[in-house]
Image 1: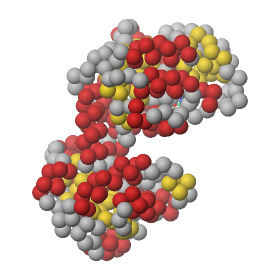
Image 2 (image 1 turned 30 degrees about the horizontal axis):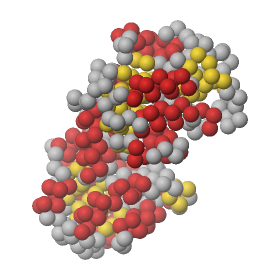
Image 3 (image 1 turned 90 degrees about the vertical axis):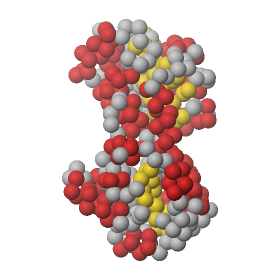
Image 4 (image 1 turned 90 degrees about the horizontal axis):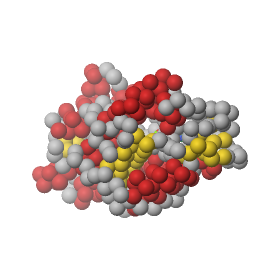
Length: 395
Ligand code: ADP
Ligand code: MG
């Protein structure tokens, strides 16, 4: 796979380079509430501009569903990128239309332009290869080379991620390379003990990754909403907790096949409702009252998970341990996250809500080895699935 350094070594002065970045930041109206995706994407734009390229940035924002929707305009993102780069950033008010053509044609060496939200074009995400291809042709016509730096989108067969790389000389940007390097360390001969912590809401979302990782890990610690389907598989009542009845048999089989690897909570925080003022109680995981929901792992579980994590050489964490968004149910996630942060081995966090939990709970992001920017993409990689946006860069 060619890298940004290879492209820079070829010489980019005077060439138009289209960079697919992940600039999908949270917005409150036009106000960017968290700019870290812009900040972490900027170095690739900066390196190319400094080398004299004419940089054309392509990105998506939210889910406009193929329609031009001002709420999802990248204009405020382009303005913030300009501040971060310390240079003027031009903005095209469409993706491949007249504005994009005029804006990109007017670039001089070292200029940067941002195209409007690529998902304003329905063809971007179309399942129809011909429709996507025709759009990719128009996108490719705006540039002479393509850099994919949007790891969060590499599991999508989208025009700006996949089809465009079939049409232009291409390479991987530094964010994509860094993600791949770290994720490969989780799948190819990880240092042991290798401990994976999984939580979040549904076991069905993560069954693929559980099956793929179990043969590789020494311990799989299960918390979050998904633990209740496992507890039910052990024959316990789970009250009103999240339960996927159609997954109980599959969980029972995993437990039978991996009796020493899968570790379930020994205690859980229960309440009658998810609310800031809920009356909570800690109960044994095997004795959840019928009229209560399990909404977090309990303190004994945090201690047990912490002990398993203390000596780990490799840790992957995906999915909060409880409903961390609501204060009475945040302590399990906090405690387990702190144990991971304190671990000396390689620690990797994947998953949008897990990364959000680290921020929301005020934990030190620098204490984690790597926080993946692509939740879905990182899980699909660990499942061993082919990521179209990566496969096409290898071709
Ligand atoms: P990630 O984005 O990190 O992959 P998920 O999207 O799978 O994580 O799950 C995150 C959600 O899981 C959070 O919104 C959290 O409130 C929810 N969750 C965690 N524990 C429970 C629980 N015990 N019951 C219900 N929901 C839970
Ligand atoms: Mg999520």
